[in-house]
Image (cartoon, rainbow, N blue to C red; front, side):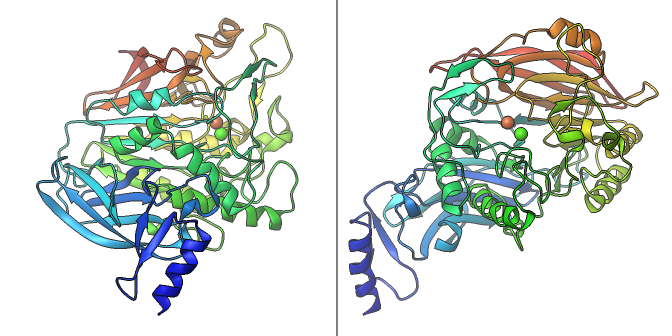
Length: 519
Ligand code: FE
Ligand code: CA
């Protein structure tokens, strides 16, 4: 009786988008009139015996409720050793719940280490596309090679996701690190205004005003993830997703946002932004926001070759010093009590780096560590810092660099800047502590160009910076016991379809010698 009533009610409320067949008391068996897998599939958080597989049912992604009935829906999943699904090694049914935006985060386990797998979902009569995941080697196991890509800063309006299309075709990726800015929270705009004052028309447009409610953020993720180039990149390899500022609000810091909203009000907004992030990322159940916070820093181990640390540089930091932005220094920039990671995350990172579980340590994180002088003109008094980056947090920055130097084979991957940089992060005594590769953006900032104005003066002021470029793209790292190679992959345009990818330049690092070498 209940099922019949439910069915009639759904047909009325959703205009026939989804009908429920009365097949059982517990779970609805939907009949969809639009593809419920319009947001594709993804995998993430690989370990030696499994990974998370993700999808989110959204037959009408831009609508309130994404075209779904407010009922739990059973979804079948399969994992196979081949992309034809002839040899299925794991399968099951999991519930997509309305509380969590009908997202699914299946934690697959019991698989073989260092092995590629393929996965897909079924809901009602509909089948998803399939994705490729890959388990890690067992911790400590001899490992000859790891290949990864780093990408992020994907303002949907400012450029097409052509770089993701190329990323999805890279050979045999072990994982993708996403450094954040998956969405941008601001109101829809037809134009992009650069820091230098340039104005260009955007090739696409967000739906809606600035995001505040859970449904605002959900819609922004749905619009973003509807992009097929992005879906291809999410289907090509497991991701380690992280968030930076724009998943919530520009340059937020712990409980502080930049428009001076009261901390208690901002925490409520942040909790909704975090929930939408969690629903849309292939992350573990243990990362589900609790009491408005996410436990997001974590480590992945790739045999004896690589310990990858995904850091959280937003949730535990003190407020940006000196009024934030690009400014000259003030006493707060060097305050001893300033925090970037917070003491608990710092202790965790310190213990992992001392443990030396693998040859290379990766710090996969959001904002630039190397404290560069951002002046691009010849004149002007005083060093100009990006105070939202680690340069605004000198005491924790020094602690991080000392730990990296002690380890000796630490590489930092960073985003946020919307430019490519290759840096030698250097201690005050001149010793190089770590190589830092800053990936540009997938689309934020539009087409870009070879170099921004004033680059020669900028490079002359910053001997730690060996490369600076203003194209869109991503970073590719090929890691062996003998060397870490980084390719800066750039696309020639994102304003129109068909942009071509090329390797703009490459660097290498030898273990124990973090200075950059030509590759
Ligand atoms: Fe960004
Ligand atoms: Ca950012």
